[in-house]
Length: 377
Image (cartoon, rainbow, N blue to C red; front, side, top):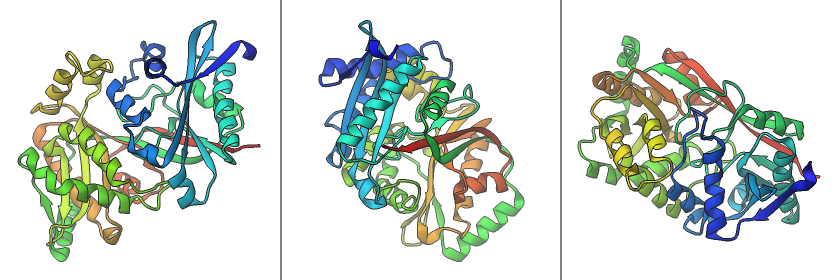
């Protein structure tokens, strides 16, 4: 029954640790759940996160008989609301036991907070930025995940639809053979494009080679994604956090950059070796052995599977075929390494990058994901 559920706002580090740990206990028997690193969650959900300079955050734990049965975060991203002329409160970090009353109590709490703050709509699941985990799977719930993806069981979708939410944006993930031959036509056209526009692929030999391109990559990301659903550019402080978080784990063979004759970054594609097993062994903690498992995987010379995490083309260069140059370079490197399978991160259905996977490469659909919304009465 709903009246036996108590919601407690997270105000202490002790409560925050419980908030972060809850899904690890809830989904400990799920083979596709990947525990996030505890330190990364602390960085997102405390004042360490520079996004809180333009976002408001509240978090709650749901209790029944003194036992935690759910959690949720409410986020008001003022930059998003200003850019897109909205009054939206986001829900994120929503996890619940399989009990509709618990799930509803968590959503109702976010709605109440949103109403109190003058919001007229609720949407989610979303984080602070598009670099955070967002969107739930709406099919193929048992399909492979990775550490950047938001895990959810099927009942979340049933429950959110029962509450009157509707899908407002869809993403698709694909799986493909990573060492499939590069079509002759693609190689020929790529050569013509590179020659015509005086473009070249940057070959990173050592980790220090990445440094001159890091800010260029994120600036290109900001421009490339500016018109996509609910996107706002990352601030420099946010970029600095992501650089610190991701650059140490970059695999240079899977980091592909395309520049023009003046060394301006035109396009990028970043992939990583499959870190799932390493994250599971770390079980949320870098110490004492989490670092070892992660770095052992990142610096491995051979691996079977990669995740295509992030890619983009500067708007000035879109629709000129530049996507294909870094896809082909990635393809060459996966053939060299001997990678068998590649998985894309979610791509908004219908955008340019998502179309290329289907028109150029042999792919199969892995799962569809979605963000949901409804008006606040």
